[in-house]
Length: 234
Image (cartoon, rainbow, N blue to C red):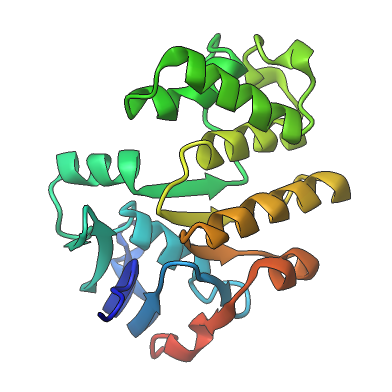
């Protein structure tokens, strides 16, 4: 039986139109094709400005492409996230498609522990189990226990990033997008994140990532994908 791709990007093109500059059009990439299988970590390569972040945001459904589709395997069937209704996109993000960013968007006064357990509670995990899993992960990421009941809005960038990583990895998403997940971390915490990524890959997660740290990239990448090869014509 042939294994299905967890992500299939099909003839994707993206053009930005700058309406405040006389509707100037800027082409990013065109006819881009990519398949990511379970257990793969495909790292996006190419010079700055080639469209790596745009591709990630299109896969997540934040950007609509000019043409083409992005199919994410959800409940055993491919769903084109670029054409799916908003309620289905939210459902896919809740259960299937995670996004690990270097930035943490939080609600003020919500504690770190509550933020980390939220993805589990949304998916039916009992509170006691969710708390145990969250504590184990926060300890692994070396976030001091004194921080757990505090809102992370006042934390350092590295501490906020560790909270974000905990939120994303606690759910064990089948598909993960990694946007510079170690950018603000020291060497010891980068090593922990590499372990988390490789453990998720061993369980069959499919990942697409952007890493400027070559040591981290080399430790997790199963292959590189050069976005520059699909650069839109000027």
